[in-house]
Amino acid sequence: MRKLLIGLTVLVLGVAFMVPGLAKRPWDPVASTKNEVVWTVLPYIELSVSEDNFTFPELEPGIDEYLAEKAVILYVKSNSDWSLGFELKGDREAVEHLSVLLGATSGHGSARIPVSYKLFKLRTMAPGTYKVTVIYTATTK
Image (cartoon, rainbow, N blue to C red; front, top):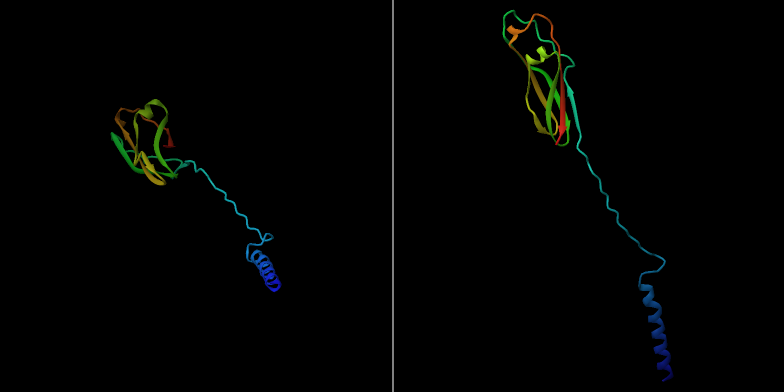
């Protein structure tokens, strides 16, 4: 009986020392965490024109209209929807005789927009040199 009791004691002690060895060691910990990364991309727009100045060729005397097709090119760079407009500044008479014809007035992303200029009712204008400033504006939607 004594041998049985000693045998059971050895067995219990052996299992007691062996099982913790199979388990995860407390000195080898693993930790984890998470981090969410968030950002916001805002709309942007850039606008440039192919030429700073455009001069009409010498006009024949007596003509009433002149169309300069694709006189300049507007370059729009954007990451969103946009609209395009313009304003004319200068002598009132000159402004009243110039039309700006945009190839497009809205779009998305980058674009190349041809612009034509049309002079009209030239026979009603006094002789002289006229100058108009066209101010283009691009706006994100």
